[in-house]
Amino acid sequence: METLELTLRKQKNIALIAHDGKKAELIDWCREHAEQLKKHFLCGTGTTARMITDATDLPVKAYNSGPLGGDQQIGARIVEGKIDIVIFFSDPLTAAPHDPDVKALMRIAQVYDVPFAANRASADFIISSPLMEEEYNHTVINFKQNIENRVKELK
Image (cartoon, rainbow, N blue to C red; front, side):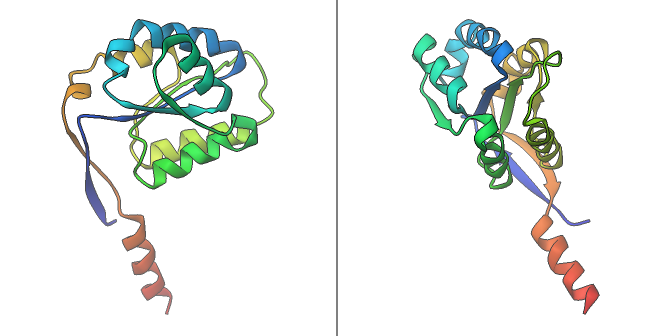
C-alpha cells in the first residue's frame, strides 16, 4: 500500500467531545489543562464546545451537536487533515442513539492515525506528552493513490 508522511505542527488541532453524562468531567479536564490547551486550536461538537468556552474562556469552534452530524463533521475534518487529536469523553454506561456515528468517528481516527482519548486517563497521557510541544511526523495510507491504482487494475 502506498503511504505518505504527514507532519503535525507544534500547534495541534484538537477536537473536544463529550456525551451528556461526561460533559462536566471534560470541562473540569479542560480547566485543569487550560494553559496547555490555549496553545492549540480547539474545536468540538455543539453543546460541548459552547459549555467549554463558557466555563473556561478557551476559544472552541463549535460544529453541530453529535446527534445532528457533529461527529461526522469532526470525522470529515480528520479526513481533510485538519484535526490532529480527538479527546472524546464517552459514556459507556449510557446508550447513545447516535452510537453508529461515534463508532464511525473512532474508526476514521484509527484509519488516519489520529490520537484518540476516550477517557480522562488517556487524555492526560496525550496532553502531557512531550510530543504536544513539537512537530510530529507520522505515516498514513495514501488513499487517493491507492484508489487510483485500484482503478487502473480494474480497467
